[in-house]
Image 1 (tube, chains in turn yellow, green):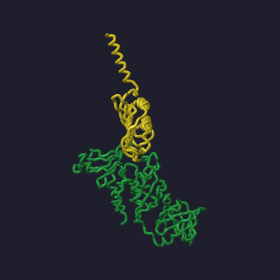
Image 2 (cartoon, rainbow over the protein chains, first blue to last red):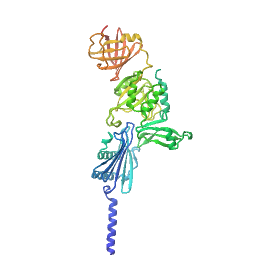
Image 3 (cartoon, helix red, strand yellow):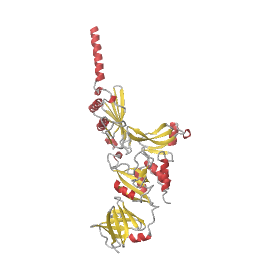
Image 4 (tube, each protein chain N blue to C red):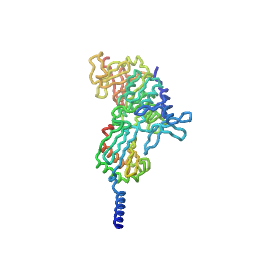
Length: 160
Length: 318
């Protein structure tokens, strides 16, 4: 009996350890939100949230063709692929803001909007805000993530 | 009464960082009533709270927000997203100058200005270079208006139309290109901490320059009589036929007129212009390019300086 209890205990703790270090894609209810902010040149202001179950919501605010919310479905596998990108970036370890510190940008495009990426996963939440016009080692990858989210949700059908 | 340029500029200088004196400012989604916001956010003027547009750093970029400010304290009224007060601010500046304009959108503001009997569209949707020529001509003055026509499908939310407007506020020095005042973002020459040179963003726009014309010098009757009618302009081997009207308009075509009674309509002309008299020397400003020609009387004809290219003009029907 004691041996079975020990086996059960070690199995449980091993599984818990695996769960903690498992790929983010294992998160059953992960949520990724992209918020695009204003610029002087009337950049579209909207947010889009995609979930690991494939549900997605767009919320258009300013300078977009469609204001208000739209619900849609996206490829759940593609969401898991995005989550892997977040993991590759070590997203939860990033700073809260990129674009204003020395070294953030090797090049800067003027009058660029800001974007905020938020990841909610396994009870944790992290938001990173960046200048989209900041070309740098971290910001370029974050911008690419943002573009991937836009493509996945096909936000252009509402923003243009 | 002529448009009061000084009053318009003075209004702009007073209000460039604060809501206009009608107590509202505009977002894309509607107006914000400052008095109502004072009650809602508990920021009474009597307690020293001032409504302002303030700049702030957002991830290394400049942004602007509407706040109530008292010393170093701030209460947010509206953040950067959706601020859209440019046409409203300019309407109020124009009203201060005596022009009854009240528009919320940039396209409607430009159209309203162009349709006025006291304005002349000196150039329409021209390049930065063309508009700079018009600004440098001396005809375009403080208080005149600039419309910015977005041509970049990736800019200004992809809208290929007028998306911004400003009021010209003069040059800070003889070699300065010229500066503007506006809201969203707030600018006034010499006071702004953002780009306030008139073109705002290179490569993004075509420019329409609208001039309040009531305070232009009167065309001398002698000049009008002298220049009205058909002229043959020659630049090397190139021939252009000019048709001048006494009222300050001019047109050109490649087709020689049949007789002195031949008229050239705006629609048929290859180009349309306004011309301005300065003691017999005539400045011609072409609307579709911003091209400037200076016509100086010369032995019954004119010598023409067209952006450094020299030519001459003779009467077609002496």
